[in-house]
Length: 563
Image (cartoon, rainbow, N blue to C red; front, side):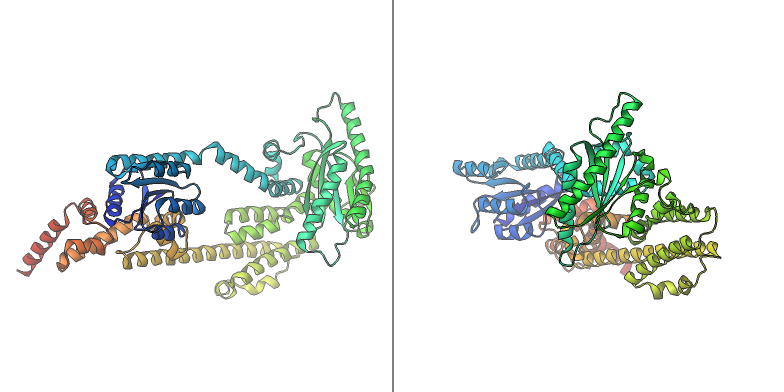
């Protein structure tokens, strides 16, 4: 809903225009009034305003000065100048400062309404304009590094959706890689950061390392690099060119040439980083190209090289030759699928935190299905799963102080006493029940908080019927965005917030009319109407009769009851 602000130092003009737009059904507006430029600025600094209908000549700050201040707060705000002075110089300044229209007060209400409708149409058009689309594209480019990192890590960790949508995602992220071509993986690690570098310094150095490596690799390849685990970089590499090959033989030759080039260039990259960045780096690279579906297996094989044997040293360069039997094979029980699933425990923790029950349950079921389908029981792998889930649940309950509440209906003592080796089915059932209980508690807390918020809104409305009950003001009072607030109110009560305000105003007006102690003009102000005419229209539409007719019927009914 667009917001219109009417500014004029003559109260009668403001009130008549407020009344005009409250009656107007051609455009939906939230209308505000101000009787000076300073009062207008106070409102503009508290809430977004889309259209301003303002007098030009006002005491103190005039309309043109006000417009310059408006642009500082809300650059897209449309300003319509309304004046009784047919002054060319004022018209010239209005156009020069960006005022979209200039009207004489004598032109009449229809011209004013058309000017506001024109401004509204231009605002709506601007939302869909190419300028805003280009802005969105620029914002996407700024976010691209983070999106790229997230997607690449999903890809090499075996996320099924990431692989299924490769072609689309490569295009969206402008990846210079072929989604159907084979890929070569390499990992670099900073061996020692030292003690003097901050986290931001380290991120900057990782960026510098990636730039150095990409500069060398780009001479004969297409590559993408991302950072992970705070001190590592991953490169995805393909031969230079469009990926098309004349024959299988030329493809193999191209792959062999690329592998030799990358293996030889890594040493140059290592030396350059030592020379220019004063950092010692170690590298692990694959010895052959892989299909994208096999990249997760290759990624984890390279990671394992850093964790044992020569990988514990510094400034080494290791090649993964597991496919040729030259390396110690991973125990068959720890399948690639299980490793990938275990790495999603961090996501499961986020799902629990954010109340995303379905996502959590999906990943939990996958994890437990894989653990149950192992060829033989693996005590340590199951212990890893058990300890990880305990950490997730305990961390969540610690952050939100839920131990006492959950402990009233759930045996939390078993968290540390379950036998993950002999009674795995009990572990699975226990964690499933605990997750259910935590999600239920989160839903109850949300429901309670929302109920408290709704009651807060209702109390404010009931006690401020004569005051400002705009959605903006109510949002300020309760500390929530007005559009979120109206959606939530409708969801919880099956009644719009505006309808509730109307109902409360009508009920109070009827009560005051029945009591018979106040004149209609005072009653109209007591329920929030600036003019008696607006109150009459509101009351007749809501009650089906005029205020005076309602009062007379109430008095007659009261007399009959007394008889």
